[in-house]
Picture 1 (tube, rainbow, N blue to C red):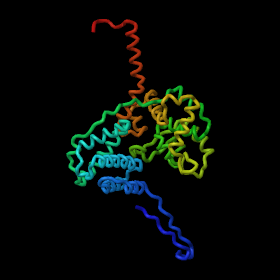
Picture 2: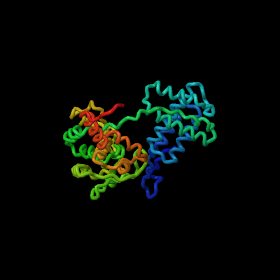
Picture 3: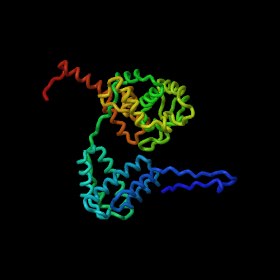
Picture 4: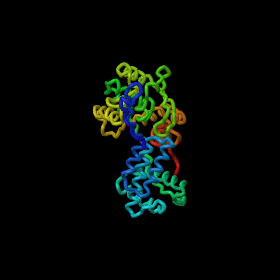
Length: 337
């Protein structure tokens, strides 16, 4: 772990100047290792080794935290069923753990994420010759509902935009709505990432998959940004910043959005701040954009992720339906089935 450096007195410094060595802020891996050291887990050093490995592989803090919570939860459960050596893991232990997580009321998507993190840990143990590779031959598969993305209805979008008077809030919402960026990507934007002249934003590392891309600014989003530029503190590095930290946090952004949902009486429609991204994709498809192009704008590695929006909104399919239904309703279908 990173240790605090001592403060050197004035007499020790060169040219009679005090040299202060400030305590180095703990890195994400330090915080995780500290948590592990305070836990009673079977083969705790294996988890420490795994987390250090993921840190060396340059995984994001959110990924590290997800892996830590999933594996530590499993190890706590593993100890609870009377086991202390990871070499003794069998498939039934994993099945019991999944049932345990489901019994706790966790969503199936959360359980699947934890299970995927657990598979990665087991692969690490296999590579270290700690467990046998046979344990991965029959993986547990959870059936996860394939939900439609929840986009905001066009009329509701207009209501929300009409309610926003603050320059920062309007810029934040319109950047999300017109670029399709994830909220974490927008909150991480620095001023140097914007190319106002070319109407572009450079995302050098995508939030979920580290996939860099370029997105574009519509005229209304660009106008909102210019109004925000006139008011924002020019000394700030981030496009959207908070009072006590360098960039606006997710909770603050969520509170901004929900405030306008309440003002427009849309709070019961199930809209979230991520719905702005879904709305962006749905509107572009309605306007005739090709899936392959939308995939790049959204930063999806797999076009099947993008294809979900084609199920949500497809004007050609809608037109085909009503054209066929008009024939049926007019009695234009003849013959026996």
